[in-house]
Image (cartoon, rainbow, N blue to C red):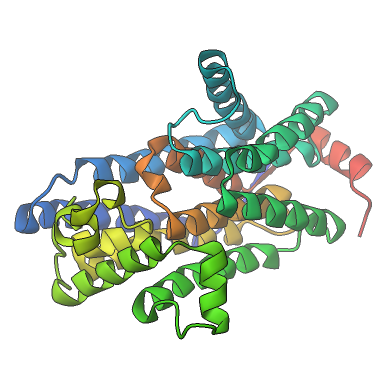
Length: 349
């Protein structure tokens, strides 16, 4: 039985080399910052390494056994929620922070949706439907507004993708949406909520806390004062006036701004480029492939969550997204049998 793997193009290989270089430079810069400005780079470096390894392993596994990675994610995350249920008596918060647990559930929901699309066999589709419903309900149970909004958007995107045969531009739309949210948080950090009674002020009053805006503003002021190496890893908590006054606000509630404040403009730019690389590498092998589009949705959801909270302080959240991105980057591995299944289950365009 012959198998073909797509993509195997030169562009894909070049992007892989770029991704490796970005990871290496990011790690090297983190170590430089640690020596120049202080703090331990170990948590940040560990996250970058774990994400890179997760992407590579997931890509290889998904090429050999389709839908294996999303199934592992659904089972792993579902198991953590079930264990928490047994321990606490209620479904909900295995990470001990509602917003992080909700972000983890959103990633698992995307993994469950990956199990639904062809050429998944019927048992996996059943698992996918049940998983999507359970994980999709979790943010609402936890009262996590951002994750709840993402659940609604993802559900709508899944429906559109199914009807439109998963167009490649879905990857681009997901990337643009994540970029818009990040840009909006930076703009709000610069200007605040705007004049009382303005549209911006009303939006902020209903979706963001005043503390978040103050933390973002502090982070940007730190960047302005320390643009090269920042204030060192963990330095935001001791430099920001807001963070010094309240231990519960020691994080910026925006991972991109936190990294930039603690490692300088170059550090923040490298993290943004890593996210952009993830989308680009998925796009190269996308085509009308639901795995690719759903992987981009998972990455966008993570970028949006990380723009308004410190969810990446919990390694499980970042690693889950890395696995789904790796699976989405695997490209299509089509055998005669899976092609037959796809033709039977997906109407011809």
